[in-house]
Image (tube, rainbow, N blue to C red; front, top):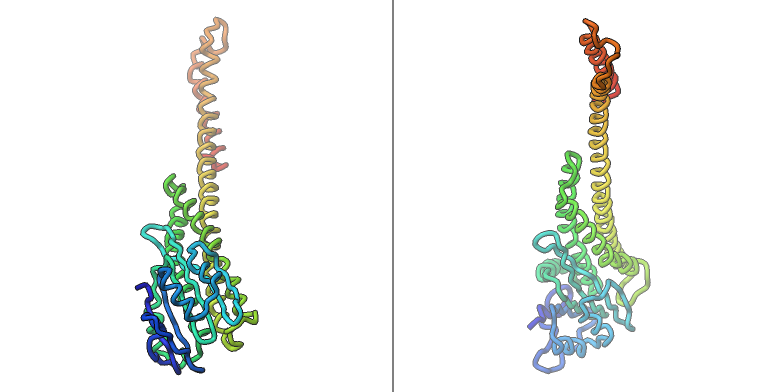
Length: 324
């Protein structure tokens, strides 16, 4: 069975099973009671069982079973339907996305996880140990689930921040290798996808904090405001990482241009210095009979003195300019 848990709560305490799987009708929860049903990759039979018992809208059920939905929030009468996207880091640097659909009613909360490896078992256990908060009702459970999903983004961001910081430090010392450049562009593509998939979560949380919605009490909005803050921080951190990767490429390119400029100036300086003896040697290698200093006793040392003097002057000049 992919029905992970189905419990009824009364006064913040577990009361019993919230689903009858043998075909018998389940009595409706009392005034201060609510059901919390968690499903993971449910079958059609299990989803139909839950839909029938809680009166879920068919369109919402269809969206819940579609793993490619974007984060959104919709109301169906006295029920609220929320889709949130989960994210986890695979081996390597690939982000795997999942989906959690939340059906929220006055006396129930149903979660449908598809492609998400982070179960709500520990979350449920933690909430059950805090009866004073669980007594707040289904909207508090919905807040806890959304908060749990958004907190799952943090390990991904921390891992990427370490990698990006390491690349940034190495880029200062030397121009990145081709493999590093390919990695940078792969990461930038991952970050853009993260912003595209997770970005709408901000709008979902904004509606939960600022819009009159069924099942969400006025006093519960502050809880969702905290989730909204976490979403915005995650998106800001990811945007910062994307900008840092762009600056790594830009900075490395500028540093490489500077290094190439230094090498070009050095080569130009030595070329100018070596041009002096080359030019003089070329002139005296033309084999004319009548040329100055050809038959002079001091002609040879005079030419060397001129060559060394000019080359020495050029060397000192280039050294003062910082070219050598």
